[in-house]
Length: 327
Image 1 (cartoon, rainbow, N blue to C red):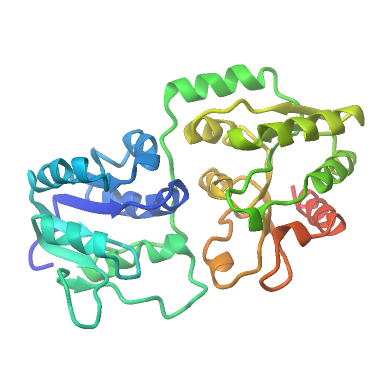
Image 2: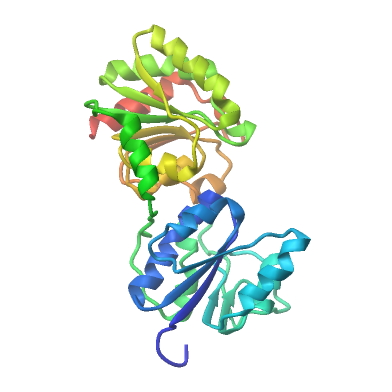
């Protein structure tokens, strides 16, 4: 940039909630570079609550593509001029180009097609296809001359109400608490119900554990069946009631470890550096780009282009034993 550090940053983060979590390293780096800067972040509706509670974010705008809400949103976006508008995604998007054209900014950083577009500084596709998504989100900083030190420092702001609910739910702490998440969003990422039922008693024998079973509302019946079945084997297990992702994050923060399929829970564990065993569909490079960032982690993959459901119980049990041996 031609002059001093930007005092007003605008960042576009319109993806899913998990994408937002992995972009928080960018927010933190911007604030670390210039603590007095004002940071405006544009997010999709699903990440709105997380953005409003994030300590590095000063202003949140919800990008709603509905025709009746898009025009008022664009007027709100234009009511403030940024010294730098940052779109960290590494691919071209018509929606992102629309916003870049609408916003007022001295410098616009983003990914253009070869023919050009609205960005002054162009983000290049990653040379390393295995580069983590959270690091890719920091690529615009290099173009702006803003230093950062890997690995990305992810973070979330946990509202007091979510923290209080987590404290009330957990009650007196057990010696070892583990969050088990059985929901995955996509059928190809689910592990079979019968395998959870086989695994959890075996995992409890490795180390006495109180499990907290988390699921999306639509998987509540499955989670209840799992809880009942392993409870009959004497496993200490309780359900995490449905709530916001911030409510779940407040529980994850208080866990000793996490056991999950590939979903946003992986990234919550990364925020709090919780030891994790994660089950992934081996569809590279995607699985590498979104792998856990926790320092202590074991990742199991299906056969190439296979399903998570194909991962064997014995393999997950061994990974769990290996993880616990280092704790």
